[in-house]
Length: 76
Image (tube, rainbow, N blue to C red; front, side):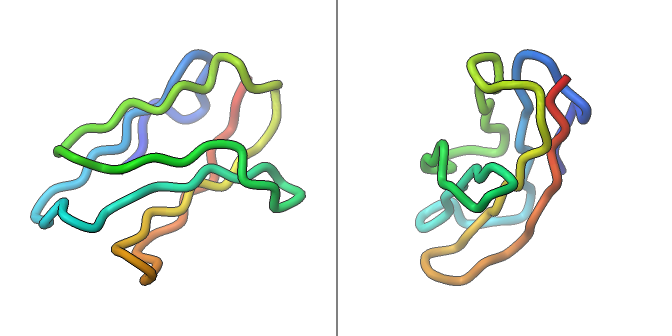
């Protein structure tokens, strides 16, 4: 789950029932450019959106090389 969406400052990625050993996230702009990435180390991960322009972004959650979930994030 990702909330709040739309957002202004940041989004929280909440993951339950998972082993966090290989989890990571990647944030892309609509052109497919990677603009942020990080490890997911606990149930809630805060992703800073404040420095990014108003736009729509794609957030991918991966377990190692396997993509688990994709979210569309709207930044106001």
